[in-house]
Image (tube, rainbow over all chains, first blue to last red; front, side, top):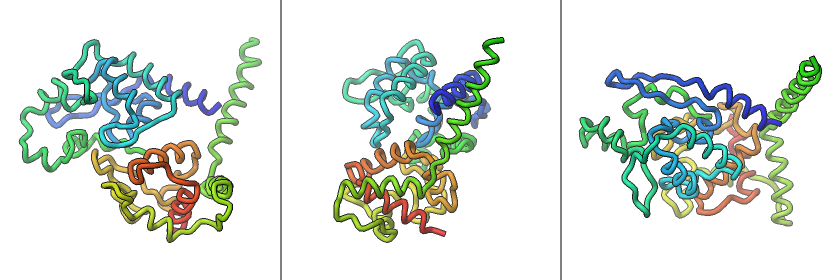
Amino acid sequence: MKKLMFMLGAAWLLSISVAIADDDGDKVKLPTNALYTAECGSCHVPFPTRLLSANEWLKITARLDKHFGVDATVDDATVKKLNQYLSANSAAKDRTTASADKLPRITESRWFLHEHNEVAAKAWKRVKSPSNCAACHQSMNMRRAY
Amino acid sequence: MNLVKYALPLFISIFMMSNTSFAETPTGLLQGYQQQAKTENPTFTGFNATRGQQLFNNKHGNDWSCSSCHTTNPKQLGKHDLTGRTIQPMAPVANPKRFTDAAKSEKWFRRNCKDVLSRECTAQEKGDVITYLLSIK
């Protein structure tokens, strides 16, 4: 029953999204889908889903046991629901260069590289990992994980 | 009219049921792990905060300990070692939401124990860690 309430809440939240100001004054919209932000927004920012294609997302959710160096497994029912949400809200075409032996990375997508082409190597060193969005985009850390 | 007559009470009862499933507490979770620990080990003698603290702060053959992200002061905010994402405190005294959802606790124990110990934790280990975190005032 808890699940049903959760899904009702998730459906209600689906259409709402929060705009966050970028350092350049651009807007990056972070998803607010309740399931997605809870399951995929605890360890990192809930990345905008349109930054990867459905094909790319499915590659990622198929290997949550080896998720960029950490175990990010969820139960099968949750994976199924996440896949539905991701597929319905993904980019039409692949955004990264395909490689059989590694997972697609948003931070290696053409969009990400273009947006960050002015960031100096020294700054990246301080950031530690390009997935640490809030290192520079402070507002992205506002909605904290539980 | 029938819809209102039947759907409303149904909706209210669903809401009430969903609320009761939130009534899990850290001590309730601990009792569950105690039952499990007794089954796993017939010589189980109870949980121990010091053992939990050692498990939490020490590395176990991998790059990370629990404290790598959660810090050695569980009353403080943690920080994900890779992404820098803020993690709310682990001690229930600082974060009353901790260990109030058994499924959520199980999920994170499973993931994080695999990262830290390359295996899932035993009920004894989970109970020791919760006992340690509850002992922090």
